Length: 268
Ligand code: MG
Image (cartoon, rainbow, N blue to C red; front, side, top):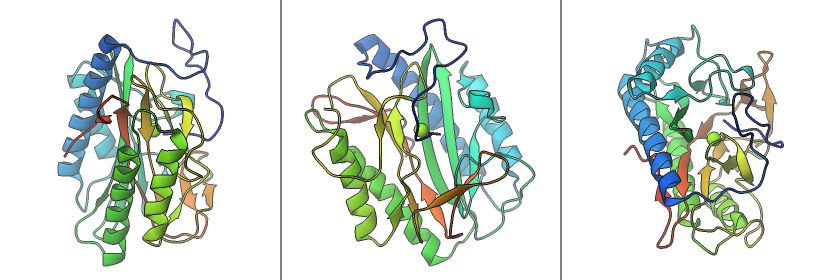
């Protein structure tokens, strides 16, 4: 989850986030790894569970059970009033869909966004999955979105800038004929779900904050088959493509390190 606006402090924290980019110590990185591993295990479970006939609420239930089994907490639940454990967004829904009675059917694509908190630190990741057999157009979108995230991760090197990540995602996406959502962006992550800096999926290279060892960011490209504009449904959460075209979303939490980025939420 992310919102393209200034971060709010978490109301339940003893030490509210004051803004600014946080650099994690070795010990804090270990906690980030732990949180990332919990998220990865939830995503693995959900990958096995997505099939025609399951409801998004059932997926939410499975995710919550898995998070609790690790002694972790569902980060999104209650965040700005979000009512569920995970976000489930189907087809033209981009992000922030609320799990409910919707039954997944053959040919749908579903986006699952998962956050888990353990020992005070947060992991955040998302995948887009085909439901049964899907159209080639949908498969192409899923693959391009996954690879645009890879391009962004590879650009996240010590000494590079946030703009280099943004430009890498945008270049890959547009070269493959997809548009990149502007109104929602990636973010720093740590003790708080949304820390500085914002990590847009578009924009010029060479700009923005310098990437330094110990920074943790969530990179999360959202690609549309049609235009990049979005709108929000009446539930005040679900973000959809304005033109009704298909959308996909992939996300990893990564740590910036000498020698290259470490993917904290790896689930492959
Ligand atoms: Mg996120």
